[in-house]
Amino acid sequence: MNYLKITKYIYLLIGFVMVFDAVSNWNNNPKPWLSVVLAGLAFFTFFFRSRFAKKFEDRRNQNKPNNP
Image 1 (cartoon, rainbow, N blue to C red):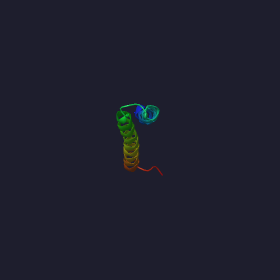
Image 2 (tube, one colour):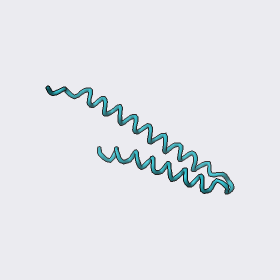
Image 3 (cartoon, rainbow, N blue to C red):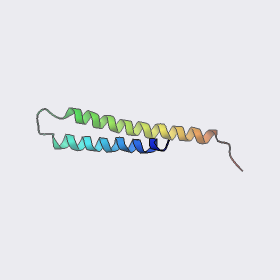
Image 4 (cartoon, rainbow, N blue to C red):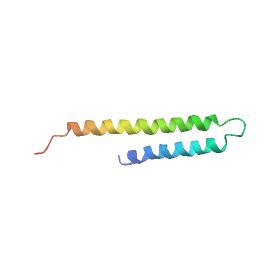
């Protein structure tokens, strides 16, 4: 389950690479809309997975019994 914490950062890295690709190729025809869309999708996936992981962690901590 530890790999799930790492994979969300891979999506963030992919997003930045796609933004770099879009900016570097912006003056070429056709415009790099595919890179922009993939960057947006990668950033969305990063934030979605982060939020889902936090909800999952909160639910797991809520179900644990407190030890006095």
